[in-house]
Length: 201
Length: 298
Image 1: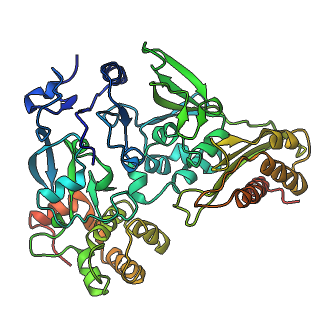
Image 2 (image 1 turned 60 degrees about the horizontal axis):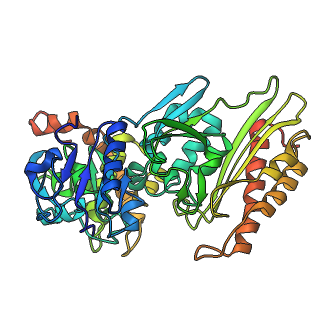
Image 3 (image 1 turned 90 degrees about the horizontal axis):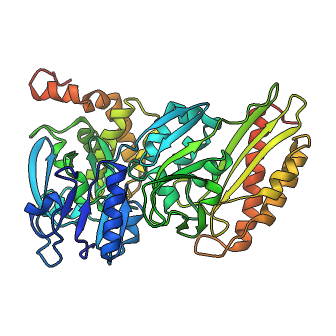
């Protein structure tokens, strides 16, 4: 017995249970449910759609298209808190998971401590790699609130900057860690902040 | 990119994954298993008609098995790096190799099973697993039946991107208990040469050596990556070590022999001659590190 959502087959969302082989149907009709930046989304996708393409199509333009081969990291997003290159993930694989893009990092008009640190340290030049750098930084600080410089360089190394390099971003990340960015990246801290209970130092 | 893709299956059991892939194969059309996507998507085969996704299978685990370990095939590189059991295993060479398999994002996606099943000669996990006498458990394949077979990793690779899987699914990597000579010592080392550490290896090497209380080598494993059609063991170099005192001279002789056993080719990452020489250098470094770890630097 195949569980209901085992098969995402093109040719009609009603075929999601895997009955029948739709060989000539339109392919834009797989339905997936994801949480993006805390909000539930229901998306219609094709089996071969990559997460990068779907996120940009849905208006998350902070997810940047770069090399499309998993090298440059510009398309990085967080999936259940882990940074992944969205150009290498099939959109269907995101079904049921929780995504964070740079659009979900600031609390409305209030920037996240990592974003503040990037601004304060002039860690942004053209800005194309910045959303991904902010996200991989948040993932780093969540698993290692007080990283060494080597750890920071290793984490940022997965996002290519072709403007100027890594000196200022590294300084920004270390400063964000010092300012408690790691503590704030934890879900409980964020929930508290959203509920207005967390005072912003 | 994958605009011919017509079906994307997400089974939750190995049996269903095999049944779906077998019925798709019978129906014709190209298809594949996929887990982290870091090889399949990059390869970008536009003719794929179906995919069986493995990320919902219950194969993401590291378990003690007897005095060894069992690693579920969809454990990611990042899982291996984070696992205390893997970090403790064999001086941490598997965790270390996993940590060099690419950027953090790649390591959060790519899986141990995928790294082996893709059968790149440069697969980062292959040399350490070979040096640990690992075996892989394969479910199904070879024309039906859901039976399981266990294949030594040594006999798993058949050529670049070719394995004995034959439609089967790699479900687990089994690592036997490491040799623990009475009164003696055992040590391991992993070495990788790339443009950057996180790049694809130009050459990689793993070594494991056990010595008795008198410092005589009782067991040796030397494995090389990216210097042949498959990751390979340098068996003649291993044989050169066993039964003799394990010291610098023995290490140098074994490294030279291992370089003779390498079958490198020239490509964009390096010439065959360079790779052969670097095989010697990396095996020498690996054995030197083993000596250091044993506390015998004579």
